[in-house]
Image (cartoon, rainbow, N blue to C red; front, side):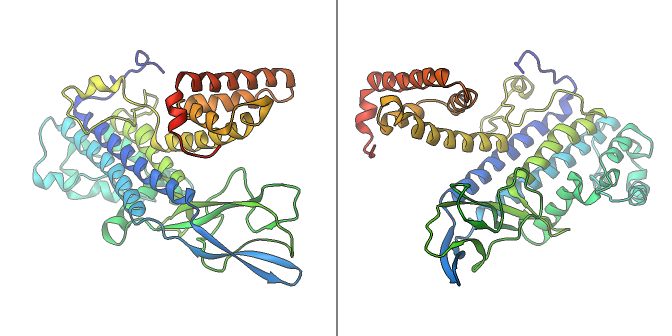
Length: 394
């Protein structure tokens, strides 16, 4: 979508504040995910071997603690998402009244999160809200609030508003988000090897697939005397306060950020979500004289997606070095790495996708290999200083 295709006329001036709040949420999620990525990349699990009969089990010997900043950043992001809803509702009530709320009236404006229709009806009957015409039952704003309630779904415990309410209530009154390291997958580097894993790699992991790791947990086993390389994928996960289910932190943040930004805010303001999506990215560290003018050029890729793309790019760079350096008399690995580091993440991933699409076409594959190797060598010729300054081994 180009800047010319966006239409934010649905967002009135009295609701522009929410754009800055969503940008703050995005920045906070980005910080949290950078920390979780660094933590898992360092390899937080220390392994030990336990011999049992004719097999050897690989068990968890020790587990590095998750940085304390992670659950607090998660709690901050979720609290700000809830604030975005509360502030939007408050601004909408004031706009409908055409005047500022009194202190007494302000105490009655809050976003309910009810799991049955009766509880919402009781919320509307509260004396403070009965004195606010925009919140009378049957008004457009009341209907929008009702539409967003958890009881509208059969599985109300998994409704985003329900999740947001329980997470932020816990963060406010008890503790930041509860985070732990879980096992995402264990798989042999050679699928044909005789390795038995406790948690196979799944194409679609489900919530609650595994409990947090602890010392002594078995990860895999193999015949005694065999040396079988295998990979372990740890994940930083959150525990949902009301059900106890563990979910991957990035997935939960993605679910709740997307729901608030693309569904809840538009519904509260307009009654539907078939509008141009609010952008998640905006630099709010500098003052903005015209926030509306910034919307057209604001970033549209959420922090969770950017983090996934970054991980994909890291894997793509590693894979391209392994493929191109030894291929067709190609350049040394250092030359390929320096060239790849000069490219942006999207370009690197595009190269991998391009090569992947040529499977079964050996002649075309060879041509593209040579083309990429030529690019790497040309970059080295144009930038001899960068090659000399890299002290790493090829």
